[in-house]
Length: 143
Image (cartoon, rainbow, N blue to C red):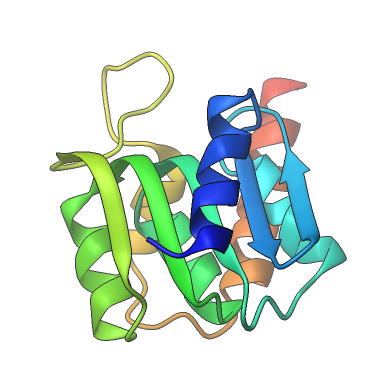
């Protein structure tokens, strides 16, 4: 594992939800679900050369990381499909635990972002797609 990926992983171990690191530059965010990763990408859309780490990476996060052009990825928990997507994109991925799917917060079904990601075949437009989906979910919660 490269130094940048070790730094990104260390940021997660220190309490961040996701982190991207390149040399002395480290970007971290906290929060639930995919929102922290979306926030990182909103501020730095092109993460070429960055190593990224996240607590949980499913297909939705994998598509975001592919579109952002990260160099390598670490997750504490990753879905099988996310590993496949990242590897097919040529992005090395390491992890602690692999799971068949990413569950919703209640644990009684598939994560809504994962449901949306199942409809996708490529990362093109991933940021816009998942940003819109997050807004839809937030609006549903406040209805």
